[in-house]
Figure 1 (cartoon, rainbow, N blue to C red):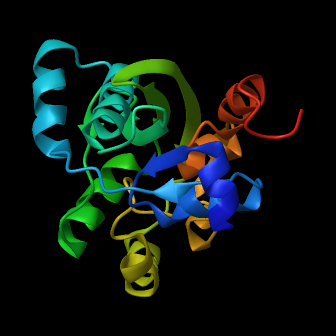
Figure 2 (figure 1 turned 180 degrees about the vertical axis):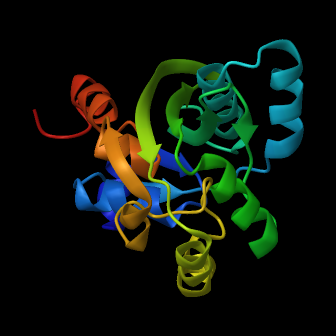
Length: 205
């Protein structure tokens, strides 16, 4: 990132995700990363208690991250989150262990699930833009031996990924079909975000 360009744009990213940082960098967006002291699990439990819809959860978490970041009044703070929802409406959290990830992937195999990727931009303590994109993914009916080999090879790389896979890596072998934005699958509705930044004069039109 070019520090002087970051200061000109005033875009702050309230996310620890290396994938989101790489997407923004690759798209030519200048930004600075800021800490977002946000209790994601507590916020998720609160919103699920009132509205179990996966898109709503993703949007709520993205907004919470952006609002929790300390920023100057004239800065734009970008928060983002991704939620996995099964075809039966169950919301998955990131697996806490290899055993939990194996259990989740066994539940998902042979079924359809949805990745809801939300982004919210906050200015002066209030949301000024938001977008959520949903991708539909169909896992194939892989065997337990494949799953065990997959986890042995990939766990360290995907332990922070909801769903336990990287679609851009070995995780592609888990699927029969994928429909939706590649960027949304990676965790950010990038094209709508770029359109917003262009409308603000923050990137070239």
